[in-house]
Image (cartoon, rainbow, N blue to C red; front, side, top):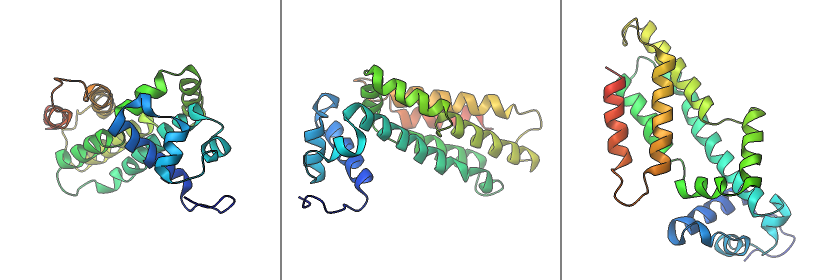
Length: 194
């Protein structure tokens, strides 16, 4: 446990990682400020001090994971001409699936306050699925210019189809009896990217 009043390096990430471990191990209902700070080895009040409460904390966690996925996708246009188009697109799809536990998003959407905070941040320009979609479309445009995709490829619609479907897979992949979302993402890429 960190002593009171001592700065904790990487506090946000430490708390976010702790929350994800709790949700993965015990489910979303177990996510309380006390559980998160206990898992992270921090003082009990640190989550409320830094985030104002669990709702705001969960919103920041979701926004952070969206931003992480968007940052990863931003480098995609620079990969044009490298590897195969399908391999690059698959990397993005799998990165989205691995970005965070869908139960965290489910938890976020079950709270009006959390959902409003996320929507407001996205409306104000916080990176999310739209940023990933835009980066993917830019990448596909670059590959089309290089002749690695057919001239008539609708890159905007392809990016929308991929990101929208992967978002769906992310949100439903943990359901009992659901097909493996990674396998489905691979099939989707094969269908969308010749």
